[in-house]
Length: 110
Ligand code: HEC
Image 1 (tube, helix red, strand yellow):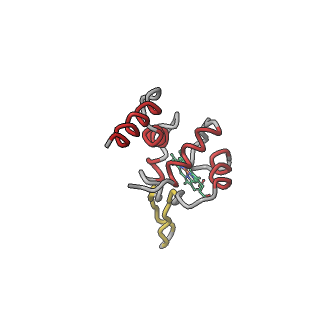
Image 2 (cartoon, helix red, strand yellow):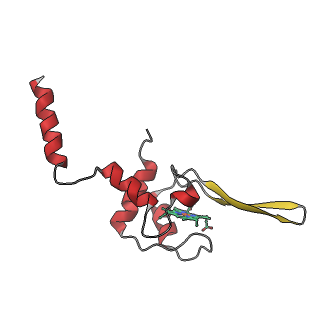
Image 3 (tube, rainbow, N blue to C red):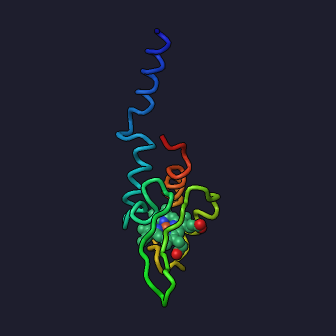
């Protein structure tokens, strides 16, 4: 019991100087990255969403934002830094913020 209380106090002490946890911060950043939230296109858990579809002759074209949960950090970062996409907006994110978003998408989901 004393050990439990001690470790509890230690945890509170360590997190004491920040108002939100790392997980809360990561979720907030994902949904509000100074621009349209990633979740609006990639879904709350990053598993991808259908953005729309249209008919081209007798073919249905489906526009999707892909699953972004299984990427390497390198690929993830390059995609965010790239200005090539006509669908995904360009974001002004720091390296640390990109790391946080990557953490959010690759951490074990509850
Ligand atoms: C308006 C919709 C939209 C929003 C908002 C958006 N994306 Fe995307 N994203 C896409 C689409 C569509 C693609 C597929 C490739 C392309 O067309 O650029 C993509 C591709 C990606 C890729 C590359 C996937 C791969 O397989 O290489 C990553 C990583 C990514 N998005 C991360 C993000 C993150 C992180 C955010 C928030 C900061 C975000 N996206 C916001 C639509 C969006």
